[in-house]
Structure formats: C-alpha cells, structure tokens
Image (cartoon, rainbow, N blue to C red; front, side, top):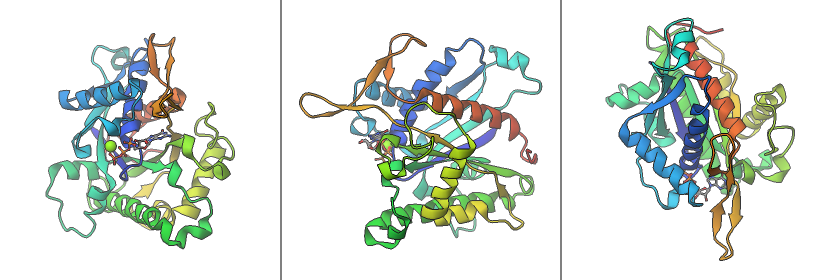
Length: 307
Ligand SMILES: Nc1nc2c(ncn2[C@@H]2O[C@H](COP(=O)(O)OP(=O)(O)OP(=O)(O)O)[C@@H](O)[C@H]2O)c(=O)[nH]1
Ligand SMILES: [Mg+2]
C-alpha cells in the first residue's frame, strides 16, 4: 500500500478540511460508477463523522471535537465488491492517508534514526498534501521580514524542513531512490484569502476549472515569493528524489452570522445525495479525490518513477 501524508500547521483549518473531505467522500461514494472508496479504523471513522456532524450543526469542529491529529489515518482504495476492482487493468491500489502535524515531521530533522514506526511510514510517503492557510498569506512579499510575519516564516521553515526530510528519507531508501514525490497544496479558508490576492481562477471561490495552467502559475508565484524555503526544497535539482510540480486545490466553507451574532457554517440542500450538506466547494474535493485515485495507481510500486 502506498502512503500519503496530510501536513498542516496549527489552526490552519485541517479539522474543518477533514470534515469537508468526509462530506465529499460520502457524495463521491454515492456515484454508481466508482469503486474507489474510503476505509478506516472505527476510531478514525468516528472522528471524521464527529467532525462532519459538527459542521452539519453549523459549528466549526475545533469548538467541539477532540482528536489527536497524529491518530487519524484512513485508506482510499477499491472495494473488492466495487466495479473498480473488476475493471482495473492491474492489481487494485490503495493509498493510506495519514494526518500529521507539521511540527512532528519537522522536529525529526537532524535525527539519525526515526524510532516511531508510524512516523517512518509517514516519511515513506510519495504523496504529500500540504495545507496552506489562505487567511495568513502576506499580501506584500516585501513585508515578509516584518516581525508580525514571524509565524508565517516559521511555517515556511517547517514546511521546507518537512519536505526536505521526506526527500532525504526516500533517497536513503534503496527501493525508493528513483521515486518521485507528488506534492499537493490545499489552500484552506479560501473565503478569507486577502482580496488583493484574488486573481485569475484560483482566488475566485466560484467553481473554476481545476488544475489549469493559470492556477499552477499562480501557486508557483505564491510559493516563490512568499514561501521561499518551501519553494527552494520543491525546486532543488541535484541528484536527490525529485518533486513533481505541485497541484493546487482549495477548501472553504460558507459562513454566516446568526441573529445572536454567532458565526455559523452554512448548509445547503443537495440533490446529489439527498438531504443537506455544509456549503463547500465539492468540485475541488472531487478533483482532489480523482487525483489521489490516479496517484494511488501510479505510486503503488516504490521503485517506479511515474512519467
Ligand atoms: N472563514 C473560514 N474560517 C475557517 C475555515 N476553516 C477553518 N476556519 C476557522 O479556523 C478555525 C480553526 O479551524 P480548524 O479546522 O479547527 O483548524 P485546525 O488546523 O484543526 O486547528 P487546531 O487543531 O487547533 O490546530 C475555525 O475555528 C474557524 O474559525 C474556512 O474554510 N473558512
Ligand atoms: Mg484541529
């Protein structure tokens, strides 16, 4: 089974993102033509359901749900009964997604050997999903050196370290030396992206073509100008394990104020699965899932170097 990690900084919206991912998986799973589904331990499924239930009640999950980020893992793969199994041209692949805090990965920097089996599994990931909080992105790159952007610079340093560690870990593994790492960036809280940065298709929260060249260019400009350490690791040439060009997806929830002035997550009716769901960009999550499905087939063999 291939491994993937979802890494995020504190408060950057990962819990909300996971609740939305669960909502998307429910809708995705209702499609008759697909056999690619989520499986998880009862504990992880319960946590995902609790987060989702919280959003459905109109609250952000941080207010009600407790879980240790490092405990959450789930698997995307073909169910043996699904048609995907039968129609797959080769053996069905699975992708285990582990939710991990940025600190726990970045802290491993400089350690000779990683004793924690769970962390070793995470470091073997050829797919890395980095969450970037859109509300924190500095509008003016020239202001990056200012004191107020210290947390942002720290985030950049930690993200760069985490990616570098993945690269080192795979390079020193004989089986993975020729592998490639597939970075995915998810911009969370897109509704809070500063208006000055709302250009092209990425900044618009209306449905937009996914993974267009304009989106990739916007993202690369953002990384190069505002997350220089992360960008440096992603683009470093040399003889190490190479990173693919990052793919960009976005996440947000509709927010409204109740009559008492309380912030609430908006819900909408959905014809696709019947009933209600939180207001969020399903098309983004659908594309993300389709991409993960594709990657689960491509990174199945650790020595493969996918085109
Ligand atoms: N407007 C808006 N606010 C969001 C969104 N996602 C998260 N937030 C806000 O950010 C806060 C933190 O979100 P969480 O999803 O709990 O973030 P987290 O990364 O899990 O946070 P920790 O577990 O505390 O590190 C929420 O309580 C909301 O106030 C979003 O899509 N839009
Ligand atoms: Mg959380």
